[in-house]
Image 1 (cartoon, rainbow, N blue to C red):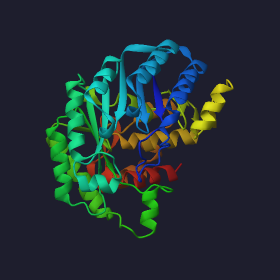
Image 2: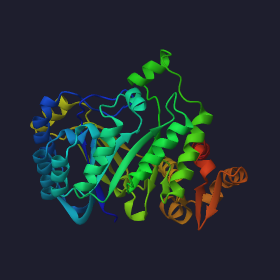
Image 3: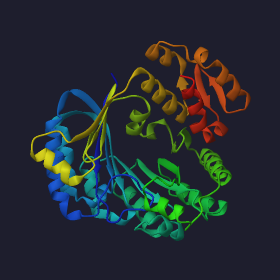
Image 4: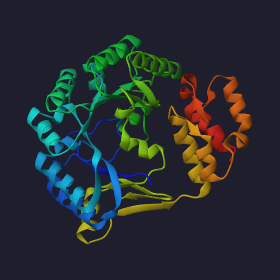
Length: 378
């Protein structure tokens, strides 16, 4: 079996960004109680028989924790779980919450990968996104991470902002490449229901970028980053080489088990998916009572598993492995979807390569609708 992954959700932010729909709170005073509960949850869920080769500390803003708290969390993970010596251990960082000393302490604690939420190198864009850092802060954070000994550094960018121009996006990409990270994630701005950003959209305070502009920015990023040595291995993700692909996130895309800790964290033990309660207070209360803080559990049926395999497979540059699909589900993918494969191949959206069905660059623009077309035929 493939080694599993551990996700640790740190649900705290100095200030919540208006576009974000991940669970987080801004009451930092509850961090010490939360950390105690998080470590207790690891004890409740201990799985010494299973090997884990990735730990991902996400949020929220994990870098609001101090080095002692992060060390305690990693020590608990190593005590309760069999962590592979070569595990990828990632922490997400906000440029407005890091320092040289803090980053060096995280590196000394065993964290070997850092993902920095830059989002943009333009101060006007950062203001629109509600970020607490400046473009200069972002550049400094990347340099500090390198100085602290991180050689596996990733950064996130957001594109297709309402008034963003192609030249503005080009400058973000150029600056990102000049910083030479090992990994770049480029996410299109989306107005998630229930977020302040979506409320502003509904109220007419801004107009989202047109679909054609979104497509233009996506293709430009893809072409530019590939020319500068980054492989496009998943719709939103680019890596210097296979070595620098996100090992942990790849588990989400490839049906590999993972265990999530903290409020709103997801766990997956095929075919069962579960999510912890979405409240720090309720989470801490359940842990204190010696109960698992699970809020929802779902056992996926054969059709749901196939839907996920299609949707997530088409997000990746390697596409859907037809032989693996047949071994898993007992059906011939090419035969089952021959009409759709023929139609999308003729349009230049799909191709077959080395026994796999793969989206082209143009096809990736249509990934959602193409996946839906496959799913509707089930």
